[in-house]
Length: 55
Image (tube, rainbow, N blue to C red; front, side, top):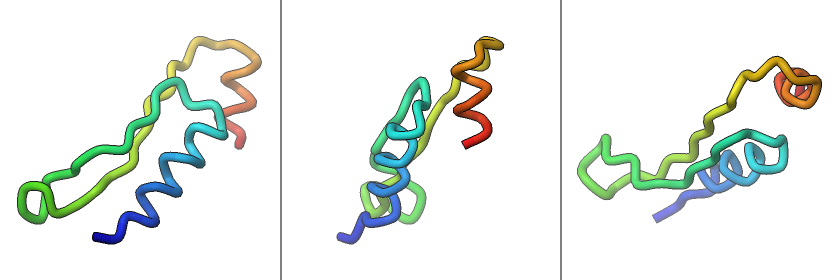
């Protein structure tokens, strides 16, 4: 199974400073047949988060 884009998404989100990054089984096209990368960002109004949003 190829998960290049999901892995790059995960690593890129971590490098850009997202509050929560995830590499997980995405379900979708048959249970267990896809890998997804995702993120969560806590928007707390800090200058650091403003810079993360810009990136």
